[in-house]
Length: 160
Image (cartoon, rainbow, N blue to C red; front, side, top):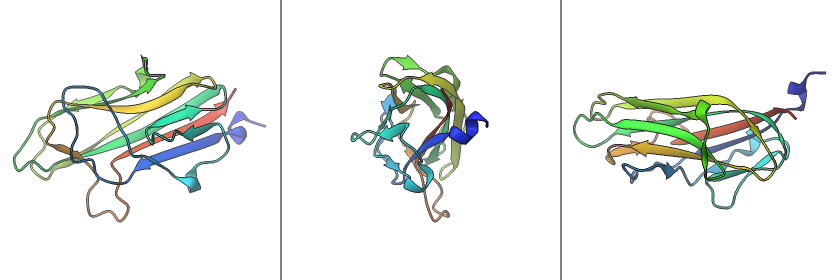
């Protein structure tokens, strides 16, 4: 039997747009909702603050997710957009580090995806954070999608 058969998961989304982001500082992504149909077991849970995942079981975890952003400023922009996972409010997870800076046309959009692995202990907490050089960028996916999302974060425990 492989360790993957023991995997437990948690997935959270922010499904409402974040149209008032903070610039020039690392900011916690917030207002997450746990996706019940994609959350199994009791290895991790969304904290009542709706921004932190609390780890309930020691183990080796896969993680991933994405941040959707759009330029709705009325003109072309060249923002720096970055994301990271923050462990216990003190440690940046290296595999989660993503950043890009490019010209985004007015109305244009992009996605910053991340993934990696980490060893976690019961009592640890994980928070997704963003950094922007320009606060005129909105976090939201394209309106053409039926189920829009601003941020996503998932964890899969693959073994102890």
